[in-house]
Image 1 (cartoon, rainbow, N blue to C red):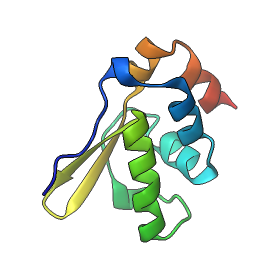
Image 2: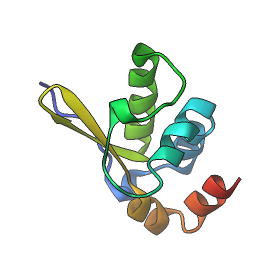
Image 3: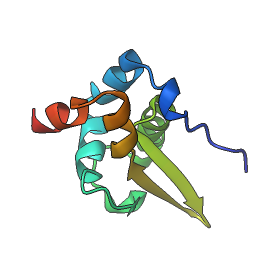
Length: 98
């Protein structure tokens, strides 16, 4: 299995984060992860087929919004809330409150 790209906090680009958060399916994923707890990807009802969700997870992961971890045949997702808050203070709260 290839290593997944998870950018360092300093590598987050505002335009990438905003583009990732600008899609309704990705926002549903982020809202489902807003508690901060790691969640099995199958437990999130994002209203899209699994093949499409894989694309959305990649966009969120590569922009720095989520962390994805493989364990066996499952994928686990975590919102990188602390990293986003440190890099762009207040952004996540505003987006989640909208």
